[in-house]
Amino acid sequence: MTDDPIWTAASEASKPVPGFSERVLGRLPKTSTGRLVPPPPAPGPRTREAMERDLLRRRRYLRLWGTAAAAALLLSCGTWAFGVWIRSRLPLAEVVAVEGNPRIKPLPWAGFHLLRKGDKIPAGTPVLTREGDLLRLGFPDGSVADLGPGSRLTLAARRAAFLDQGRVWVNAAKDERPWILETPEGSVLTLGTVFTVTLDSDFPATPSGDAATSPATPNPRSAP
Amino acid sequence: MALDDLDDAALVRRSLAGEAEAFAMLIHRHERRIFALASAGLGGPARRADVEDCAQESLLAAYRGLGALRDPGEFGPWLLGIAKNQIRQSLKRRGRRREGTLPEDLQAPDAPAGRDLLEALSRLPEPEREAVALRHLAGQAPAEIAQALGLPDGTVRSRISRGLERLRGILGKERMP
Image (cartoon, rainbow over all chains, first blue to last red; front, side):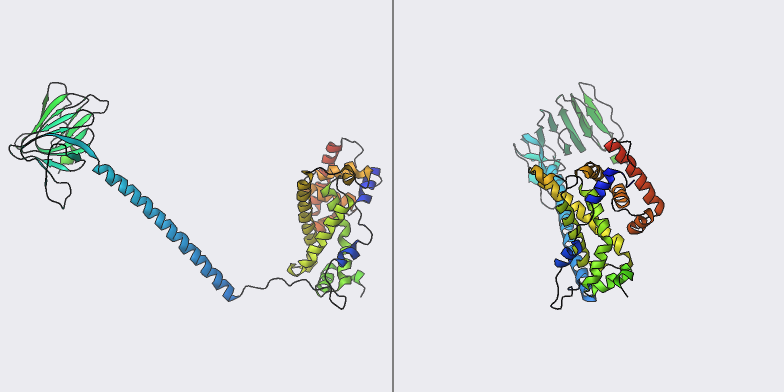
């Protein structure tokens, strides 16, 4: 192997240069007696103080990150809750016409508010009429709902409402989304028609209208 | 007792006490291997001065870190590890330097006949390159290489064999050993 000229040349080229060890030693620091300055000793075992200091630093670090994570979680939960709340407060309909003194109770702890033309009706807020009252609501999609005397209607979405008592006449604008009216007795679902629902304490809900509406179906919310 | 008769562990202990002759003896024992590794690792275009610089830096780093060597008897493999790191750093520095153009005379190797072989060696994977370099450049027996690298004898032999096979492929010469 080593007889091969190419290997011999490579081996010769990779031989240490003469005086190499002296040159290395010349670069090492020496004491006044000519001895080498001993290399620094290996770092000894860590002291108790150093370990406690590290532990404290790690705890501070964890506390900082924990606080930051909790704050971020709180902020995101708060943002989500605010979003849900604000969406529920968005007006879904507007009072178009009023007769008598229909009322609304905007907040559970607040008193009743008499409705006037132009008032906005948000979701989840019951609208009440007493004997002799009439109320017409207009929806952004063009639908119109007339609430009869002695009724209680709560808007749930743009095309959905819940009738607790009384009578409502709905002229549902045509749309891909169905117009849904729920009652304790069942629900009416239509894509666009005129219908009336009357709730009588002695009789179940009776939908009627000049176009086909889905029959009243049992409402799970009314189950005991 | 003469320094020649002392083993690496004893020389390391004496070096730690600042005995220059002991460290010189350690250098003398291991310089051949370090030069072989550096020549093979840095390749054909490496100047002789680059190889020497690399070897010097390895030994200086070894002296500075001698206190951290847990088992003085393992000085050889430990030093080779330092040398390998040094070669990697030199290659990185050279890579950065190559971004500019080096004058041709600075790239010329000292031994033109071995230039192709050293260049081919530098292209081998590191484990095979170091085994072949120690075997054929430093002229060490497989058992010595196994001890120096802390590997089984069979592993060293197979690395040498694979390395030579690759070298044949790189150089395209049938007269490879």
